[in-house]
Image (cartoon, rainbow, N blue to C red; front, side, top):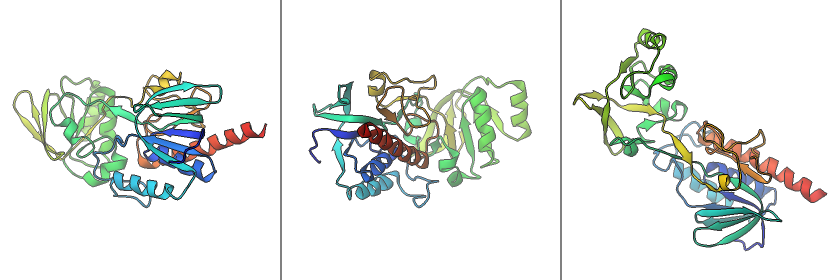
Length: 303
């Protein structure tokens, strides 16, 4: 790692958004440090899709290729660790890691992602990202026309059933208890041959993450090959909040159209700011962050 006294930019989080921002800033001749603990939220997902030139590759493979490319830039450094403290200073920000390493920087970028909160149902966590999936644009093609379920209720269950019906005609909505759908929503789903099962779920029977059936509280089962679900989440890092960054009602870091948070000098990009959870979107946001942040530094240095 290059031993700079002060970095122009520290990027916390070394997955797709963070590495994309590092590439753009490194090419702009900025002294950049990427701090990452090596635990991306999609580490259990076998393959990544819908990202040009990398469709079907393992997420870890894409990450490794990105890091290898960044090694060509002497302006970009890496530090393996977990950030547990951040504070504003007269010259920018100070960042400390769990191992008591301290770094100074003019600007900060949070590409820290989010942490999914799994329901306390046996088999869900083991299947998450493999056969229990969140995004049809990322994984829907691979499970097209298969026996598919939606794990949800109310407005989410209805809207997601409409969406997934594009990928399969063998679709069932599992509400895990009494349905909260309106009578009109129930009728619409019925008109499209989408079944509704209101039984309480006990477990998801799976083998190496691949689900084969749902076990209900009454002892019955329902065969299944893929399940869409929306897990609640929290921010993966508390540092943005500690610095005063606003968190919106959905739980994401508030940013403007230029990836700027509500704290001057602090940017955010990737899954911690958007419900569009995809590699392509994260890379795009990281690239935008790099361009806007570099322009901000140029304007400050010019005066």
